[in-house]
Amino acid sequence: MDTKKGGDSPSDQKLRKGTYTGHLVATEEASQPTGGISGIVTNFKHVLIGRPMPSAHLAHERITKVKALAVLSSDAISSTAYATEEILIVLAAAGAGAVHFTMPVTLAIVMLLAIVAYSYRQTIYKYPKGGGTYIVTKDNLGATPAILAGSALMVDYVLTVAVSISAGVAAVTSAFPALQPLTVELALVAVAFLCVANLRGVRESAALFTLPTYAFIVCILGLIGVGAWRIASGLPAVENVAQVPGPAMTGVGIFLVLRAFASGCSAMTGTEAISDGVPIFQDPQAKNAARTLVWMAVILATLFLGISTLGQYYHVLPREGETVVSQIARAVVGRSPFYYAIQATTALILVLAANTAFSDFPRLAYFMAQDRFMPRQFIFRGDRLGLSTGILALGILAGALIILVRGDVHHLIPLYAVGVFMAFTFSQASMVRRWWMRREEGWRKGLIINGIGALTTAIVTLVIAATKFTHGAWMILVLLPTFVFMLRGIHHHYQRVAEQLVISKRAELQAYPLPSPKTLVLISSLNKAAAKSLRYALALSDDVTALHVTDEPEAGARLKADWEAHNMTVPLVVLESPYRSLVSPIQAYLDTIQADYQRTPVTIVLNEFVPRHWWEHLLHNQ
Image 1: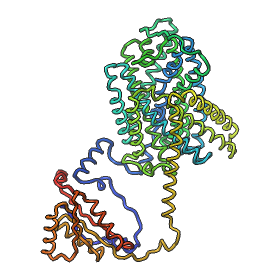
Image 2: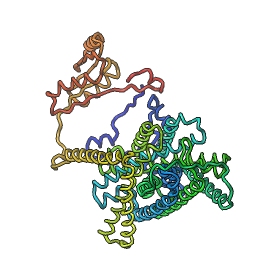
Image 3: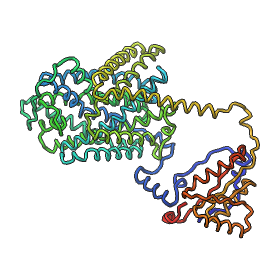
Image 4: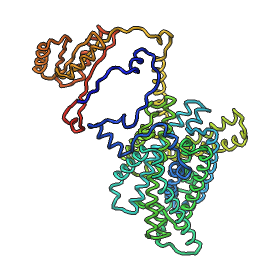
């Protein structure tokens, strides 16, 4: 057992005198264990997520516009892989006459995207420190609307991970049907991979996700380009994927079109991510974030329009076991290597699109925890400067949801857009109030833009809630008030604790003598370690008692005899534990002495055996 000898340092003496002020700087190496099980765990952690970074390195974790587009826009851009399909699922049920509404619905969603994106561009410049919807709403509408908007976004982020990964796995199983029985397992592996990637830090996750995002954009643009060329040339489909819609089940009424519109609005989820994530951009942060938002909106609109156009031209309809994008790719390029490239990049971006939520959920939880609406653990950064608690919480919640729905995207889509459009509405309404109250430069233009955005997204929220209510949206509408109640409860708890801890009198800050503590030394036997612990305890107090817990009365009797043989002056108390527990007997003993030591501090001294080699930890139970 390693020990160090030596007297008090000058700083130790000053600390006792109460005159020392300063700070300690610990190196990364000094803070790590030298061996044992904890050392093995630490080494494995270093291999998995990398070595710890100093807090000063946080500024270096900011990323360029190119990488930020991949990190923060992958959710919105990837939704083009299933948004058209969700429109068709609704329209195809009404027969051939309804399918022709695919393009008008797509165009309406693109127009809405333009309004929302431009509105969020205004928000970025006014709130360049990030926080997005939650911060904007709290600043302008108050705490309750803010936590309602924040709750809506957090629910949406969990759904984003579940939907994106489930859709990505669906793309893989479309190309390789033999993998369909492993849908849930593949999805959970993808969630775990994203958790680890984000725990490694923003820069590393950005580098990891950049290539797949741009590969998907290039592949889908290539697919649209080849498809447009074949259509212009009058060439037939390479593979015939056309399907004849079934007989009409319902009339093509406004309600049906609105349902299709509500389903297609899943293409807009993630639009707010860039305004939430402004702090991860390199300087000038607001300007770079605003430009990236425009890029994202243009790319999303182009891909969405292109896929819907090709789907309608080739008469593609949803079918079991194969996505609409897969069918379009077979019609345009057949089962060529390009087809498999499209499927591979689609699967990758759908899985990695969940990274948008992994970027924004922890940051939103961080802001809400700062305001004491979330547990304080969500504030702290991990070894790689990521908000680890938020990352892990999101991964666990999304994994549980995937297991619950067995990885079926269509079970999740009805729940998907309600929360995010509610958040859109709160954000735009908050900006309207800001423009009206503060009358800042350009307030008239801003008022009109955000006013149109607030009105439009409010209408869409009502449409989605009404058309999807019986398909599962009611659960979100019930869940959100529950979230608000829970977060209010957390806030009330923190307020109550703060009131109890506040110093009300100046005298409480002044030093006053405390009685000598009652000190208990836990020992397993009478040996050198116990003797050192007793000497240390006697340096702290004159009232020292040795405490031994045993589940064998004979062992306790032997210790008492050994104690008397060595003429120990410290009293010994032996606690018998018939149920072989260590903690419970000690707690019971503390309860018995509580009446005698109500105003006296009670100190418990424990010694720890520190072996020289890691494997020696396996030989001691501590």
